[in-house]
Length: 451
Image 1 (cartoon, rainbow, N blue to C red):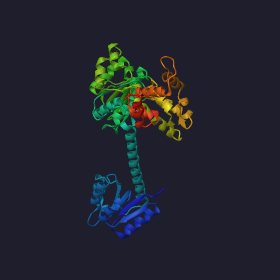
Image 2 (cartoon, one colour):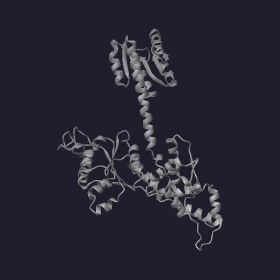
Image 3 (cartoon, rainbow, N blue to C red):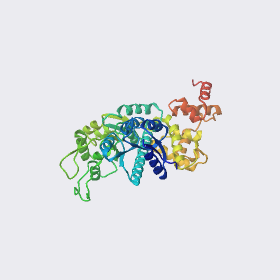
Image 4 (tube, helix red, strand yellow):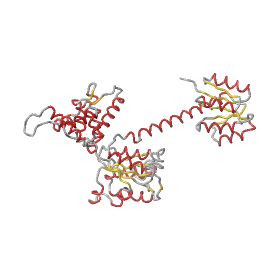
């Protein structure tokens, strides 16, 4: 591993030499400057893990140097050295953002330990920054695959509501990506650095769900051996995602409505409500308006949640996105399996685009994972799940209405028109599925008098 760079700023030559030898012996790459001005010239030329500087220097002192270095790199880690008589200056430096200070004369091991601590802090800064980038990447709109008009409309709503505090209701069939949209809203808002917590309201019994949401005190019920904050309070400053809200029991819907209206919850076992600050995003695969009409969902709660509604289209209504999604899942599977990437044959892609996908994106992901493992160098029709192969055979049998065998040209014409229909007449998507250039597709259609 490469050595960590340390910059030493000291105008006394003897002390500068002592520090260089001490730090080099400890395994650091040491750069020295005999003045603050020289340090400002050196600092931008290297990635310094730590800067160690004296406070008292001629011309520009250590405090001014601190300000200048922070202008160059606001995350610069700086340790100042000071005499006992100048501790007040060191305290001032701490207030201005210096990492630590050491008094002269110092114990060698003490200084080295402070430098090690400072370097670890620098590493944590970088790890957090890398994590932040990864989160931004993972939950950015770019990770929600698709270019269809329906999906672009969803993106437009998400961008408008992300940095507001209004409640959002996401409706869509199972597997359409409702939680992914909820996370995109959270991670593109000012709440991104705070928690995103999710709970499936249909997966827990009523008593457990109430405790999970609102919290409880020790002894509130049998088995409550410790206090529990509950998700509303644990998501403080962030977002609480209530998945499958349509499954919530009516008795809890009353308490949820009050929590949303008052921005406070009452944990089990206490009578005093507690304020919370969390944004609420709910999702359901049910038609809540129908649920309200049939008295299975409270009307007042529905309108409280439905300030902004986002309706996610099922995959069969945005077939033009299927080729992109299929290739994305194939690439993801290759990485997960540490295997070479695989293409998808035109026949397999045609079957994928034509299939009904009742399980939506989740079903497509599973189908591609299965096909990747069972296929050879290419994902072909035979490697797809049996029901997709059978559906393809049923949908794409080219039979002449009068029982006559059609010509090869007629089969080609019908095949191209079927693909175009399946992708909403998107010629670019159709050409990609067919494995031909867009110009070739236009020539074929012109020959068939279809344009």
